Length: 240
Image (cartoon, rainbow, N blue to C red):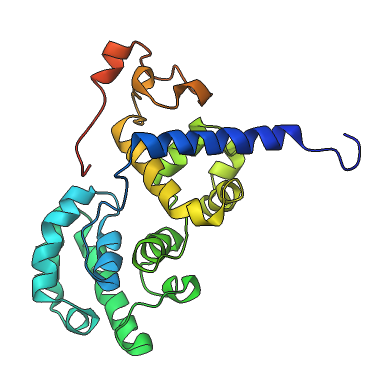
């Protein structure tokens, strides 16, 4: 390629990625965080609890959890066995209890009980990685971020926005996808990809024939392409 010539393949990728995002925005106008919360602390704890379970399950237990321990100060002093019993149904409840008690204590010790609004400080809290931090930053502090969960990773792989090697590393995936979009779009892009993954682009049998971005998807045909068959696979529930 001559010096100074445009990278046509890169330009095409950016255009296709942004077109897919526009179509998903039209398909899911109500997309947003599906965890119930009223404070940054509640969102932080709920996100930690959401690992390897559904948002619906987390939303079923957090009202009880936060009624008893509404902030970092109270949760840091909670009895471990009592917390375990409340969150038991979310799975891996012993490890999750250790995380929420630990992060609560760290918040009290380092931040006077308040959730910090910076990535560098969030990821220093027990049980908090970049994925959780980006959820909190994007939805509680309006700081753009990409949430590379299983749905997000599956979709960006099917859309061929990143290569297979990059996809093995969530941080590299986050940066590679982020480079395709304006920073201000990152949080809503995450929501829309996750909604699409939960409702149509399923892991085992995606509803390809009922997909609003099928025309631009390199993985079209992974699931049923017949519209009638595909429509039966679509999940329309709010919290999945």
